[in-house]
Length: 224
Image (tube, helix red, strand yellow):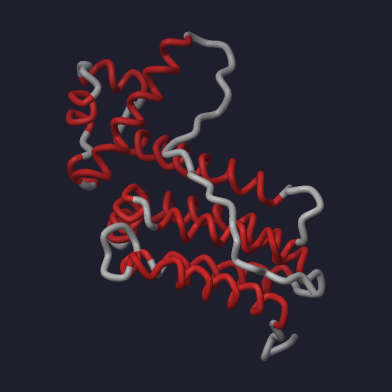
């Protein structure tokens, strides 16, 4: 059995990541990326209400009409922003999932360690709870948040399947959802500038051991 020692690599997730540029006008790609970076900064520092099209345009030093050339609406802007945010995580997750010669237990620990460490960043602590609150009342934000977390859970589902090939697809998804939700729930207590931020290293150790043991030993109490 693989021993999980808790000595995880320190990985810093980029704020945003963009798909490879394929043709087109290079300056146009640069402008879109600058717009998304400015949007993220407004969201982190002032919240979703401040991320209006006019505020974003002003932050980029451009006219509103120039902004709408790249993003026709606020919804297009939010969609592009969340795609760039989650793409940055997917790059790191993919590198961990496909680490050669590394047992799945260690890769599960690596991914969980990355997520829990990232929760302590200002960006993550500020952005995601803001979106959670908005998703209660805004169907568009709700759909984007669900899509974002589905993409984030995918590597967990894959690794759980490697650890426990005997589990059904639903069981793998249930365990991945529980692990993801458990980690995200620490944001309000041990995230950036939260009361228990200093205890996050111990919380991380407890969580990772618990998750690995859970997947190793899980038995469905209501088998089909």
